[in-house]
Amino acid sequence: MRNLFFIASFLIVQRIWANISLPAIFSDHMVLQQNANVKFWGWAAPDEEVVIRPSWTSEIYKVKANVQAQWEMMVQTPKAGEGYSITISGYNYIEIKDVLIGEVWLCSGQSNMEMSAAWGIKNKDEVAKANVPNIRFFKVTKTTSVYLQNNLPGKWEVCTPETMKNNSAVAYFFAQQLQSKIPDTPVGLVVSAWGGTPIEAWTPEETILENPVLRDAAQKLTPVPYGPVEPARIFNAMIQPLVGYQLAGALWYQGEANVGADIYDASLEAMIQSWRKLWNDEFPFYYVQIAPYNYGEDIYSAVKIRNAQRKVLDRVSNTGMVVIDDVSTVDDIHPKDKKSVGVRLANLALSKHYNVIDEVAEGPLFESVDFHGKRAIVTFKNNNGLYLSSSESLFEIAGEDKVFYKANVKLVNGSVELKSKEVKTPKYVRFGWNNSYQSNLFNGAHLPASCFTTE
Image (cartoon, rainbow, N blue to C red; front, side, top):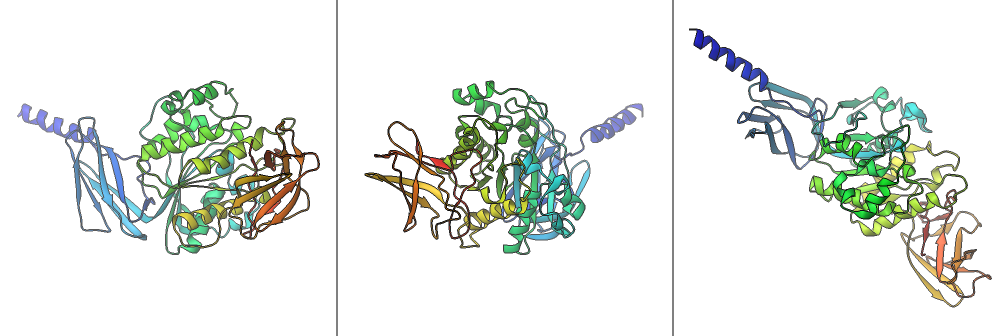
């Protein structure tokens, strides 16, 4: 009798210890990517059978936990919809309620991505109208780690005026614009952002250590009082635990913390590729070019970051960049017009990824330059309807000595013709080459051109 009691007690304790558990990202109000084979994962006792029953199908998914007490299972989702639930059972029972199927976007970066309406934005009138139950936020709590983590603090929230007010404004306006063109499609916004943090902190450590150029740059970063600068400290805790959660794509708004760096293009390229490798998905990656701002005496430190961001477009496939010179001011490093930024990011996605709008979603981008005697002829991508919003010339040309002079500008059939009395034989061209210059070259979509240099 005593032995039977011991065995029964042991089995009860074993079941208590063996309860299935899930990462925080799998919880009530979650959004799953539509029409996809999405991965579920969690923990359970070794060899414990885990049974997943989604309400959108009669199919039952079963898997057993391995000796590391881990399990994962791929589950097929339907087209966009709402009102679903998911049960997961083993020795215990979990029900995830109010599940939406739609489009899931990872929204990351530093303070301009983090910035909320409560922080202070131009579009405050939008807060009261933000009762949008099919937009959901998963806001990742700021945490760091020296080591890779498998879970993180955070929860899914339904979009209300209160939750919208305290979440990423850029992310919200992105979702709002998506839904205006793709109706009846829920949007999930996984917001993982931290103000004042350099790109190195968001990049896997091995990616930095394996590249001597990235490694040397990371070693030169100096501590700041508002966040970590060490490689991977944020990635380990705020991105790695999300790896595998099916995404439509990623949005990135960062760069101010790297002003002064000479290799930001290499850093951004490496981070994008490392994330895609971990997700095993070449998902679209759209980012915001940092705005012009008066950084002080060094008039070229920030424009180099903007140019580096531009160059990544040619190096990394399935990327897009929005330029926001015209909706920012040079005396505020945190531009208040977040709606224009979110809408432009959404239009990139709607044009490039969803193929539901035909209009150009990017500003003019430098394509090539030809030199004919005293003239330089510059051609641009996205050049339909090219125009100048002011008579001031932001173009400069230089000869072999690389001494630049203001150039006279003439628009000719979608190209820009440049000349200067001081330069007899031009060899180099640059545009908007100053930290605080705001572009005055636009295309027919009224989107500004990016700065560039041909040096």
